[in-house]
Structure formats: structure tokens, C-alpha cells
Image: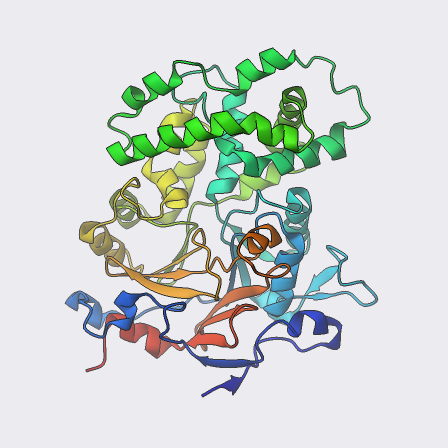
Length: 448
């Protein structure tokens, strides 16, 4: 049975967006696009200790939007679709940052689930849209994504003395970061004497790429930090990226000298206090706990579960920032902290076992809200190792959608509200998916 959807502000100025979103809702479907097999299976084993636990919803309504990947129109339209912002009068649909908070927006928290960067069409415009939310005094929580941190690691590695652990981190950003360098070059360097002080093409190549002996030495350097599968995967990935990175730069019309100049400009923009985007990494958090919900980009492993149990989210976020500032980038980027924004629960990733799940439950966390794993038919609830994950990456950016055969940019958001429960809205699913609080609780304490 479907019902009219009351959660979206139906103003005529937003007809173009509302026409793409569902106008009705159903109870959370049990199809494969909405839940995984473990949730569908009525006989799945659940820890008895959870039967007496009661899920606590965030005290304030939360709107979760993740993986906008440099698509500012997808991001702003999703906030409009969630009823959080509205366009100012007499503005065109394509105008960016011409919005104000709604009454609901002033009462809600906007959790941006990471991966703001890469792919396109405009990294800088998306960052400016997010910055505009801060200027409106919106309650914004910005979560670290793997694409975001890849840029940071690349910029930091380029500014530090080369070692086996860090010299691959610039090229490791890969082809998806090239559009950002193109934007930065066009907006800040084109038409200037950017060549002054920039070394030769060959010297830029030497500074950007890992040394010839990296592939031989890295497996020994990483032993004890990464799993054997993780080391093999990293070396294979870097072999491919080293062969293709310069070709991707030239396809974008950039020489290695221009890439190097743009990276130095990015260091000014993102890493210096007076830089236009210095706020981006400064505001970033690793995790955010709201009630029984933990918001992060990718997932957990046993070590991070015990860190959260023993020390809590505030400590984890402080450790995240302290580790970014350390000289040893390798120890940070391959640590359990970084696994939180990188894992896909593969053999190459640090493991989440029953031991970790028990710890995270003891910490009062029963639902992980994540991005990172993109879905083409709206949000998906999964049960992984007995821990509920709400997957909220609904393929918003037009670049990914074109590759996957989807039209235009995406629109949608995940709403978490103690009165309504979880509401998944997506332009790629015919109805909004609603899971009331009692139904969510029943996943941990099935009704016999």
C-alpha cells in the first residue's frame, strides 16, 4: 500500500525537482535493491543481548546526503527535495547558492557523508555550496570520505620528503582528481605567469611519481600494516595508475608542469589558513554518533569498534585530526582510522568480526549510516556481521550516472527522524522507502 508523502515541501518554484521525486511512500521494501539477503531471511541469527535494547533516534532530525562527487546541482536539489532549503524568489533553477534554510532546515542537522570531491562537473562549486550552508548557520556535520582524504594525502606527500610510505600517494589519487586540477588551473592560474618557479617537465615527473624501486620495497614496508591481499591490491592498483596518470592529465589538456603548478595552488587553497577552502579539512570529522546511529563514510573494523567503545567518537575524531598532522602519512592512511572511510569489507580491508560488533553494540551503536557503496535504486539496508548498515550513496553525480546508464544528476536524501523513522528518498525508486522505529527495532529483536 502506498501513501501520500508529506515530508517534501511542495512549492511551485521547485516543480522541476519534485517532478523527479516520488510523491508516495511505502513501508521499506523487501526486494534485493532495498535490503540484503541477511535482512530478508527471517531466521537470521541475532545476538540475544539486543532483544532488551531500545534503539535511540537522534534528538534532532537528520538529513544524510553522501557522495555528491563534485555535482553541486545534485547536492542543492537533494537538499531542496528533503525540505531543508528553498530557492530564493526570482532565481533560475541552475543558479547555485541562491537558497535559504526552510523552517525544517533550521531545526535539522545536515550530515554530509563524505566524497565531496572528484568526478565532476565542479569540485569548487560544490565546496562553495557547502560553504554557503555554513554561512547560513545551518547545522552541518561533514564526514571524511576516501576521495576527500586522497586529495589531502596527495598534497601533503608532495610537500614532504619522499619515503617508501608516501611517495605513491600523489599518483594514487588517479584520473578522478584531474578535473579538480583542471578547475584550479583555469580559475586561478590561467592568464598568469604560472611557469615562474615551476621546474622542468622531467623534474615534475620525478617529484610526482614514485621512484623506480617503490614496487620492490613497498611490500616489505607495508608488511604488518596491511593484509597480504591488501598489499597485493595496492601494488597492482599503483602499477595501473603509474602507467595511466600522465595520459589522463594530457587528455585534460594539462602537462605535468601544469599539474604540479595546480597542486601547489591547491596546497594554498586547502592547507593554508587563509586559503578559500581551508575550512574543508578543518571541519571534517571521522564519525558522528547521534543516538544509536553512527554516521561515517565507509565502515568499521574490530579496532575502531573497540576505540569507540573505550574512548568514544570525540576521541576518534581528535585522533583523526592528530594523525593527519603527523609526518608519517603511511601509518595514517593504512590504519584502522583510515579504514573507516575506505573499507568495503573485502579480504584486503581490516576485518569486522563478531568481536568488533559486540563492542560497537556495547558502545550503544546499532545502526551504521554510510555512503561509499553506490546504489542505483535508492537506499539499502544491509546486515553485516550482525550490524545494521544503512547505505545512503544513491548515485547523485552525473558523471557516475552517465557511466551507469542513468539520466542527468541524481536527487535524493536519507531522513532520520524519531517520529517517522528512516525515510529514503531517491529519484531512482518509484516510492519513498519508510522504516518506522518499531520495524527497525524488530530487525534486532524479531517479533515471534
